[in-house]
Each structure stands twice: as C-alpha cells, then as structure tokens.
Image: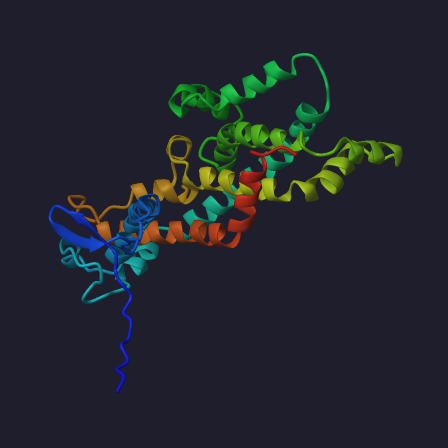
Length: 303
C-alpha cells in the first residue's frame, strides 16, 4: 500500500539574533504627511475664517442675558435684535446709502479704469511707466494722510454731509487698484483685434466697451467686486464727511448703535446689523466665485 505525501512549500528563513523570520515581509502603507498637513491647514483656515461669522449669527439671535453664554446654538432664539436695529434708527436708509455709494463707485471706477487701462496698456507714449508707478503709489497712502486734504476739497465743492462726498472719497481708494489690475489684462489681448477694429473704422469707445470688455469680463467682475467690498466697508471717510443720521452708511451706523441709557453696548443689535451687512457680500462672492477665480488667476499667466 502506497502512501501519498503532500509536499508543503518550504519557507526560507534568515537567522536574525537567534530567531528565524520570513525573508519577505508585507509592505506597510506609507502615511503621506504632506497631504495630511494640507488637510489640517485647510480645516484650520476654514475654522478661523468661518467661526467669527457663525458666532455673530448665533449672538444675533440671543437675548441680553444669553450673550454671556458660550453656546453656539441659542436656547431661546429671538428676532428682537433684528427688529430693534430697524426700529431704533433709520438702518434701512443707511443700507440704501451704502448701496448707492458702493454701486456708483464701482460703475465710475470701472468706466474710468477701462479707458485708462487701454491708454496705459495699448498706447505707447513717453512716461507711461512713471505714470503707472504714480497710480500705484497713490493707493499706498493711508487714509489718515489724505483726510485733511479730502475734507478741504469736499467743503470747497459744498458736498459735506452728502453721499457725493463719500463717492469722491471712495474713488480715491478703488480707482488706482482697478486701473492697475485692468492694465495687466489689457496688455494680454491680441493686437489683431485692435488692428481689425481700426480697419473697420471703429472708435475708441466702441473698441473698449464693445470689443475688449467682453474679453475682460472675468477681470471686470473680480475687480468690480473688490471695489464694491472696499466701498461698502469704508469707515473713516464716511465718519468724517457725514453728520446727519440719514446720510450715514452702514459701517458708521453700526459703530454708533447705542442704548437709551448709554452705559452699555447692545451687542445683540450690533451682531444683527453686522450679519445683515455681511450676508450680501457673501451672496455676491458665492454667485460670482468662478468669474472671480478665473479673473484673478488669468492675469498671473501669460500666453
């Protein structure tokens, strides 16, 4: 009778310090510390950016006694802070003033910046580089340095305590930036478009606003939104050049919110007003985020 013996594969071992171990070990997965660090940094950045707004929204729904609690979600939410903002002062008129000032500043600055960008980016003339540096340096001066001169200019034209004073003052902040950014994009447009328009007999304004502007639309949206945010949040000029409550913009109106006693700060109303002012900016950024990213990134790459 024959017996069958099953051959078992031999495992080759290597002696290490008196012990036998397999020659081939399973490879352990590597931890990609770079990716882990990227996610940790991203989460930290999101938390630092979003938490103040979340806390402001939470505080705007709390009552006076609930503001001292650290709860993110209020236990007894109320709309009294939002109602009180509009009842105690003309906050609706202040919002309208900010919309008028910021909208006018964006329209005027973009219109002037497009024409200036065409002249500085497409026309060759002596002193163009010095003029560009002068425009850029104008945006480097702090507001306090030009405050006295702007006040004399506003008083000379009789615009004190009016929205016209704020429009002129805010143009000082937005126009240099919009010109400088649009010049960069204007230089990247092909010269063949300009030559074809000249052969067809098109004027300068038609060339800028009918031919070039559709190609510059992402840059126009990005710079226009940044100019709108700058004019919407401007505080020093709005505080200096306006006196009456009806002519104030929302940053000044929020700063001057007070209680009848005058011995306490109405944090709930201040947070409610801040949320009302911030939400339109968040909505604009979300709606135009693709154009903003493409507009800001396209100027960094040539070709």
